[in-house]
Length: 166
Image: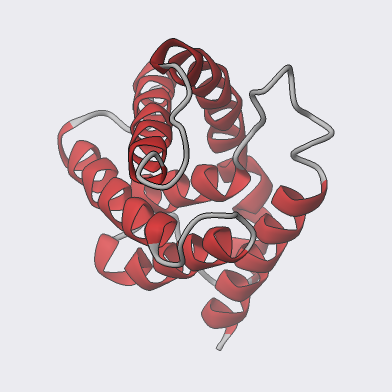
């Protein structure tokens, strides 16, 4: 029960922060994506079989608060979670440069795939603009992903969870 409450609390906090603080922390058009940062953190830190449903819920919550079709970000987040989980199996996930590179590439893939999917209905912005904004957003997200283990250490300890349990 504590695990469920911890995951539900993480999802709720991430959605609230994304919908309230992300616009305040924006630099130009680039803003931190706390939901994607949580997706990447979950995929890097825990067994994928246990976090695919929370990743999907994060994607659906992102779809609800964006102007795109329902299911777009849920699908993108699931694919990114699987890819990041695959990287986790072969890379040293505790090293900061590996985490930063993984996060930046995942954010760029997310932004490009969402822009490509939305370009069917809307005009697609220039690829250079998307790449530049997603690079800065990726650096934001990597900072968040690197801080999450320190922030979540105490709640995980209270819930009796280890680093790889959820």
